[in-house]
Amino acid sequence: MSGKEEQWGTRFGVILAVAGSAVGLGNFLRFPGTAANNGGGAFMIPYFVALLLVGIPVGWAEWTMGRYGGRKGFHSCPAIMGVIGRGAVARYFGVLGLLIPCVVYMYYGIVESWCLQYAWAFATGGIGLAGDATTMATQSGEYFASVSGTDADGRLDGQASTVLVWLAIIGLNAWFVWRGLTGGIEKFCQWAMPAMAVCAVIVLVRVLTLGTPDPTRPELNVSSGLGFMWNPDFTALGNAETWLAAAGQIFFSLSVGFGVIVNYASYVKKKDDIVLSGLTASATNEVFEVGFGGLITLTAAFVFLGAAGATGSTFGLGFNTLPVVFAHMGPLGNFIGALWFFMLFLAAITSSLSMLQPVKAFLQEALGWTANRSVVAVVAFTAVGSLWNLHYTKDLVALDTMDFWVGTGAIFVLATVQVIYFGWVFGLERGMVEAHHGAKLRIPRVVGFVIKYVAPVYLLVVFVAFCWQTLDVRIAALVDNPVAGYTVGIIGVVLVVLVVVTRIGEKRWRAAGLDLDGQRPPEEDTA
Amino acid sequence: MTTIGWIFMTVSLVFVWGLALWCYRRVLRD
Image 1 (cartoon, rainbow over the protein chains, first blue to last red):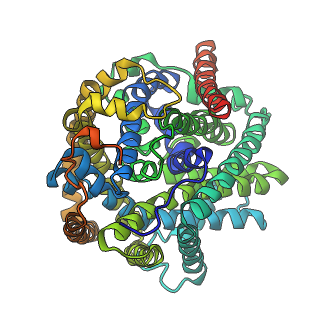
Image 2 (image 1 turned 30 degrees about the vertical axis):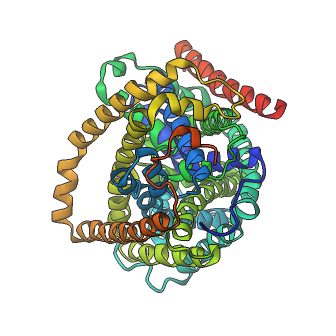
């Protein structure tokens, strides 16, 4: 459909690209806080259960759907879902697989620019923190407000440094996607993922060798810092919210239901393995999350600031608390801070690249546009949306609204829909046969049962509980805060645009004689 | 950190690192 078909250059390339998409700020900032607040070490029990029951099986289903769709000539989520779900209903549910990367990119690029600004500031002398811990915390909060504009709307308007860094980030993302799968995304991830690991190891070694930095407070040491995160509270296991938090963490961490794996896997050849590749990408994500995130963030915060300093929101921990921690580290602090924020920047950019690619592929195949024209269109479109988030920055209401309705809610919906269509419409048996083409690893038979029965029920329960816990407050917020309400309106506009383009694509695909409704029998699946 | 905390941490780290190393060994072997 879109001229010369793109493909991944190497198996390592696709593994690192998918892992790069999955590894993000949540691995280092969200995971440790969630674990510490939900039973510490005991949290790892529901966490690993969710990994085995939802994360890895649903991931395999997505890889399989993507590669199958790619063989049918499709690379976008709506088209692939139409094939898997055999019709227009599934196809239009698949639009969520474009809405999610598109809208999340509208704020992710901004967060990326914060990381880069922090990394640069630490590399060039720090962010100007001095005095006692309380003073530094205040200064750190002020610095974050100056970078993110959280204290008032319109604070970033005309603020050259922030806008220029953001524009540079947008340009960098566009350049990598412009260069294509192998020359851009794959090449960058092959460099960025090992670089992230090196940065993480250096920061980890420094954190684990902090000892007892303040002799007057011997209780604040590395061992008790690790204990803050890992000491188990088994009573938490009896709390449904713990299991919900674990499922949510796994889910968002692995990027399932995001529309990215389906797109990336569509460029894998039929004879190439996806089972071992999928598992390897998930395992890589877990190393960054548990192996690095679980040891660095809270330990460092606890050692210097105690339990009170080691709690807080994702952004609060990452951009307010940790700079104070780095300031306490002495001469090496700025170097460690620069490495840490550069690592977060790499984690963010490998994820944001994966958000542009699915929408670019969609424009190519739905409208018949060239790759370059599609890149320009998706970058311009998402940049306009980002301007909203750059202007309405007070308390990050606009960003938070997009993150909740699309970056959280829509992901649940898409993952649930995908796993149901895969297990019940495409057919589990057929799906397992398809997954094993070229496989270097056998999927245990029990995984089929998990995909068909356990994962949909698990996802539905988690989704209902998620709605029960949050929806009334969120809907009230839309009425109370016009920025939140208008932000949902913007999401609605993006959705309408994507639906209209899908409708145009549908006509083109039908005219081209493609099997867009997946009606051809399985024996013809060798195209 | 308590002994049980150390155990949870060690088992979790062994699991994630073990899984990743096993996967990459298989990928490299193939």
